[in-house]
Image (cartoon, helix red, strand yellow):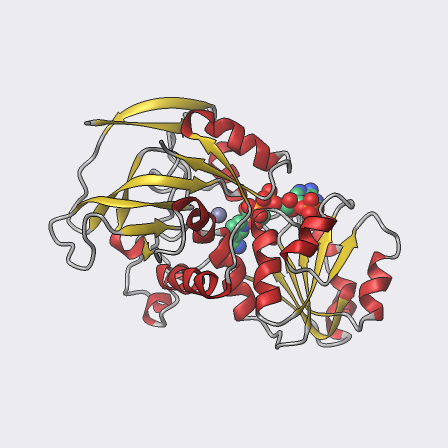
Length: 337
Ligand SMILES: NC(=O)c1ccc[n+]([C@@H]2O[C@H](COP(=O)([O-])OP(=O)(O)OC[C@H]3O[C@@H](n4cnc5c(N)ncnc54)[C@H](OP(=O)(O)O)[C@@H]3O)[C@@H](O)[C@H]2O)c1
Ligand SMILES: [Zn+2]
């Protein structure tokens, strides 16, 4: 087989089913036969042409799980047949200040999967070796895929947060990221609150490990959190600055608002909200391939799995729509035959 099928965003920003020549990996790259690819809300940056200097057409998808099917001439660590994943972080330079400190995800010259080069909404993709994470045998491809971005981002944000076992941690937005964050918070030993609009997701959130369910439509919601002393950490996954801003007063003393939702509108805060109680706001960007491997190991150890809905590649558009309309429970995953 010398061709592959995929779904790309064309130069007008429309979905387009394509058949492309299979490419050979360059010296420090591998080719992956994609088995599954999660649909992340950040794919909106490609579909809606929101990413700076984006070159279209582009095949999106940065929650990739599959099998190495060809290796470049200078690849020694990876072999054909290995099960690997690729997340947001592509190539990193190993030379800039961030890389020197091991913060590869903050590399100043990094490339991003599904944005700077074609991603996993396709039967095959080419990946730089810096992006590869080994997948443990206990995880299926469809289970592993969402962990490449939704998983590593929430796992990393929580494990680097100020929260310690027993602390109250609130997760805002129960979507692809949020439903994994609830599980991580629970397994890390935090008292876990789930914040969602409406009561629809209450039962599922509780099943995933939420001790408390908070409905943003309930007028008493803020009072409920404040009665508990406020949260040590609020992990905000909603792509809405307005929704994120509304939570600030629910932080406890020295509480930390960690923003991972890429909201297009501003997050608003006044000085008193921060200086009363020494509260802080922090952003968090995904994670490196090493972070992904640690996320996968934690999931293998604790039994954490994403809740997914599978779609065939030919229905990838529906997979994206189900995510955008907040209908999927909780991650759309495109699976190849
Ligand atoms: N920092 C990073 O490295 C990183 C990594 C991956 C994704 N992201 C960003 O994180 C965000 C979430 O991604 P995702 O894949 O989890 O998205 P998702 O699956 O669409 O889930 C987002 C959830 O946020 C809530 N929500 C959506 N629109 C909202 C609005 N207008 N106001 C309030 N709440 C709203 C909904 O939860 P409820 O129904 O429960 O309210 C929804 O399920 C996106 O902005 C994405 O670009 C960032
Ligand atoms: Zn993502």
